[in-house]
Every structure is written in C-alpha cells, then in structure tokens.
Picture 1: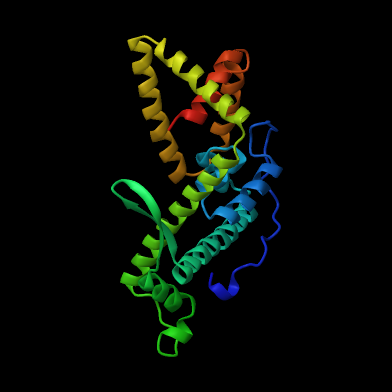
Picture 2: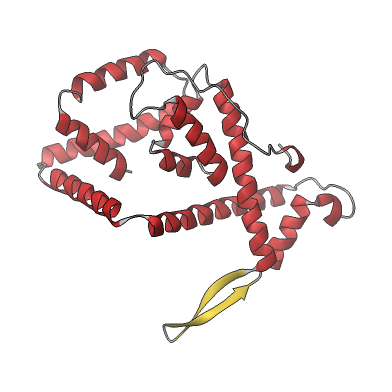
Length: 253
C-alpha cells in the first residue's frame, strides 16, 4: 500500500465469530480494540498488551477460516501505524532529538542532535518525485534493507516511549497489585521441588515450541475445541490453578 492509498480511517470489519464467549477471550469488542491499538502503535505486541491478550492468540485468530475481514483490518491498521511511526521519524529528522549532556558523570544540560542522513532518506522515500531527479525511484536492495532497519528502530523507540508514558501514568494501586502478583508467583515457584521445577522448565520449552508451530501451521478448530474442554476440566474446579495460570501469563516469557 503506497502513501497515497493509505486509509485515513480504519475500515469497518466483521469480527471473527467465536464458538464460546469467555471473559478473557477474543470477543468482538476486544478484536475492535486490538485493531485500533494496532493502528496507533504499529506493533502487534504493543496492541496485544493494550487489550490484555497474548500475541500468539492474535496470530491464531488471524489464521481463522472466517477471519478475512479481520486480516484486512489488521493490514490496514499496520499501514496506519507504520505511517505514524514514520511521521515521528520525520519530525525527529526535521527538528532533531534532544539528548542529555554529561560532565564528570553529572547531567549539565541537553543539546539537539540532527540526523541529515535520516532526513534525506525520509525525503527520498516519502517524496521520490521531488527528491530523486524528478521521477519516482524504486527502492534498491540496500535502501530496502535500510528502511526495514530504520522502521524496526522507530518501532522500538515508539514502544519504549509508550511504555515510559504508561509507567508515568500508572497509579500506585495498580503498581502495588502487579508487585503483589509478582511476589505470589515467586513464592509459588520457590516452594516447588527439583522434580516439579524441572517439569515446569520442560513445559515452558514445549509451550514455546508449540506456539511457534501454531504460528506457522493451519488453524485446527477441532483441537481448539478440545483445548477448551481441557481448560474447563483442569482449571475451572481449581481456582488456585487458574490464578497461577493468569500470573504465569503476565510474568512468563
């Protein structure tokens, strides 16, 4: 999608139908909130954090047989998000970035740093008809690689700044709750014996391998239904197990 065809607003879409309604599932509203967050951040991981869902769940939903409209909205949101990140990069290229100045280990002031190379790169690729000899210029392999690297850098900076803003806005009660959950998780794990810890480590390795396999494989509706039944059988009767599962989802890798 080119700059000229980027959507001004997100397209309306029919959410992916879900077999069962779960409070922590990908409901229609959660799907809409995710797409909006994706357009704002340009990052799947950041958007998932915004809606309180795991990113592997988002990719599984994207592969659903009835997710054509969701995938289209996803792609449009990513285009908008990346355009916003590019706008931030352009602003920095034009106006510079304020960096701290230290002397003997102490902060003594700030200075504005300009990146002329970044500015010309942005101008050539956002307005090629004006800055590449009067005609559009296709990206060379080197330029494409550089653009990919810069976009990854801009996204990382965007996510870091968003995290800093979120942390600054985070209230003390919420921070205390997170610390309490982290302490509960630590106490639980440190009470496990060697055999249980080894089994847990093996589970996390298997979970990672399974997640990677599911990302690259087709959606298995039958297995998903079995997983729902297993969850109800294993976790619903055991309230404590469900709490640990939630904590592990928050603080795990």
